Amino acid sequence: MTNKPGTLNPNTTYQKLPDGEEPIGLFVSPSQYVQGRGVIRLIGEYLSLCVSGGAGVVITPGRDRVLGETIRRSLEAAGLSVRTTVFQGESTLAEAERIAAFFRSPGHAVNALIGVGGGKCLDATRMAASRLAVPAVTVPTTASTDSPTAAHSVVYDQSGVFVDLEFCATNPLLVLVDLEIIAEAPPRYLVAGMGDAFSTFYEARCCMENPAARTARGGRPTMAALAIARQCRDVLLDYGAAALEEIKGRRKGEALARIAEANILLSGIGFESGGLAGAHGVAQGLTVCEDLHKNCLHGELVAIGVLAQLILEKRMEEARQAAGFFKAVGLPLHLGQLGFDPDRRSADLDAIVQSSLGVFFTHYEPFKLTADLLKAAVLDADAFGRAMA
Ligand SMILES: [Zn+2]
Image (cartoon, helix red, strand yellow):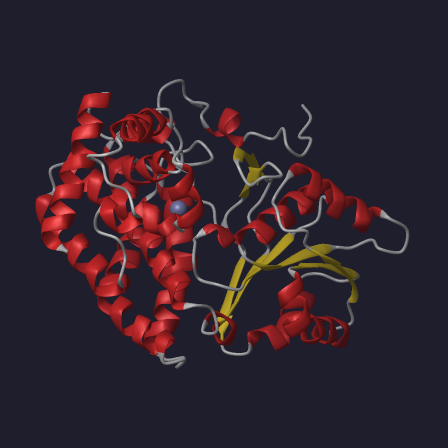
């Protein structure tokens, strides 16, 4: 069996039933997670605990100007040789191949590949690391999504349209979150990360309760993942609003630290090992509208998805709590806040519903989902959100 990068699909293995009946439980996570103020200055020391030889750096141009020298110095001080390539802006297969080719050229060989930047830079780094058969290290520069801990990348085409997911053999060797860097990002990114993270528990619970549901890599969710997902939601409810105040005031306090961990680590493990369901199905459906795809951050769409999922599941008390939280941190509660008027765009709404139904994990909701049912849930969530706004 070949596991050529780009063709690996762990689902074919993990969905097997070893005894012919019972699916397996599966938990995956990054090997190490380091979070703190100024940790970027020690990246070489952390990495040299498990890697020697060469370290490759893939970094966005803006970050290279601000952080590139600090990272290179730290890696070299720890005895690692360093090669850097600047990320070209899109997580495409061509970019992954370009990065891999750069580090295959004579004198550039590396034993680990470090991505420094936003989600797309980290995704391309992960795919290139797979091709080079070396571990990936991710250094997210915002807390806007939960993807840095994961073992798969999102592939786009050159114009930024979603193409596919690509599975990597393993999760990152190290995820490094420097709170000084996270605190410099615009508050909207932290808030969007909270929207992405808030869905984690509800989706993991849905998967746990539905025996047919599987996680991203094809196993059944574990209790560990569900506990982490629940903790993620509780931290958001307790510290989300305070973290927003801290980041607006450019303070790096306790609340911001907790929310960074919730958005990146708790949510990351929670979704990858807990599974996705209606909230992300609706969020993905919303991206069929070009204006929503272009103008909204992932977590903002997920917030709308959370309300639709909870209303679909008739969990009204939780829907109220979610809406209250979204309002407190400035996440959208209804489609109007995304600039989408469902009364005037019924064809778009139908396209959103069809696209959501085309996502397999939308069907992990615990009953047979039809277009009418899902459309009604999206509209009910919109009306509910407007009443709560
Ligand atoms: Zn997400």
